Image (cartoon, rainbow, N blue to C red; front, top):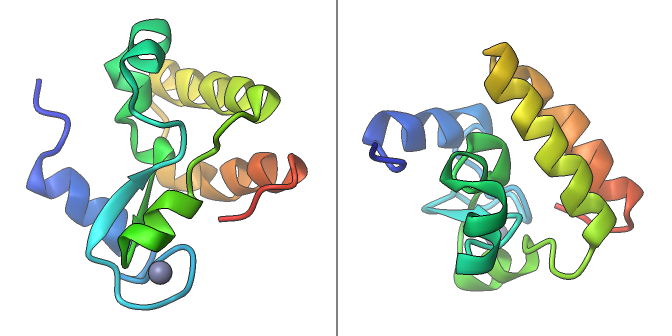
Length: 111
Ligand SMILES: [Zn+2]
C-alpha cells in the first residue's frame, strides 16, 4: 500500500486550505505529529503513523519540526486512540481535525 498517494496528499493540503498549519504560509510539505520513527511504526503500525490525522501541511522544515509531538506520551496515546477509532469506524478523518487539535492543545502543544 502506498501511504503517500497524490490524492491523499492533496486531500490533506485542501483540508487546511493549502496553508501551513503552523504559520499560515502556503503549504508545500506534510509533517508527522507522532514522528515516523521505526519504533513508533512498529508500535502503532504504518496505518496509524501515515494516517491523515497524523499529518499536517506545513511550509518549511522549521514549521515541520515544531509539529512533532515529541515526548508527550499522553497526547501520543490519545492521538493513536483517535486514529484507530477513525480507521475502524471508517468515518471521514476530516470530521476529527478539531478533536485532534484539542487533544494536542490540551497537552500544552500547539499546531
Ligand atoms: Zn509555516
